[in-house]
Length: 327
Image (cartoon, rainbow, N blue to C red; front, side, top):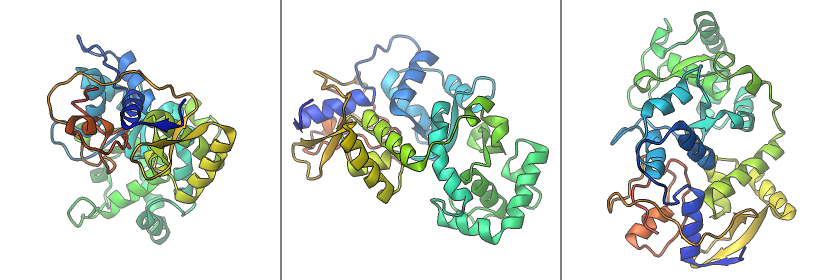
């Protein structure tokens, strides 16, 4: 692989890594194609904002075309067919079950009072008895909506004006003690994690944090094609200091390779297995590029190609849903 990339080369790397490879769109995409796409980008970000459709439906459509939303729903929220689970990753996301051990670092930190969200850490300390009562309620009653808990209280209004019951359930979700069992009408229904995640997945060992961060940085590099330290870190929202250590270790091992990209001010990196494609792109549906709300900041490689921007920062989020990706 070259150690210096042009804008066009960086753009092609990003497009191919994210699954924009001129797929045939005849007919309806089956689960095999859907699964392959999700495994390539590692996650689907979930968001409450609904403009065209819920945001997690868009990335698959932008890469494969028509598919049945019910197929994705069944694999995400049905215990009989579940191959994905919901957790905090790049924001709230649907992630393949195979990555569950790598997602536990954030849950374990939250359980130890050192989670990502300070408000939940504080709530867990201040309302420990209440949180324990909510967990006991879920244990006794099974799948639980916020409204099912008799002492939930009233929310303050707005997106984050959660009721006391909602805050408790979200704190337990952050800690990995409960997870999403279903989402009828997009409302999160909580249940004990062991009732939702298959036993063979939960029995897999939890890797040390250092190993986890190296592996997630490696997956980020493969999913992005090319990216800066920030891009690789932000894909799974990893902590800064630990990411820098993981990056140095991956560089020393030769897993990641430093490259320069035309007009980029920051150092970029690619995975050692990355090959420079001769072409990349997707089926043009319109001249409009659509990014679902909540995607990471910065223009994507696809929208750059459409708008002829001089910047070529690659996709930072698997949630970015591009509807027009010319080569």
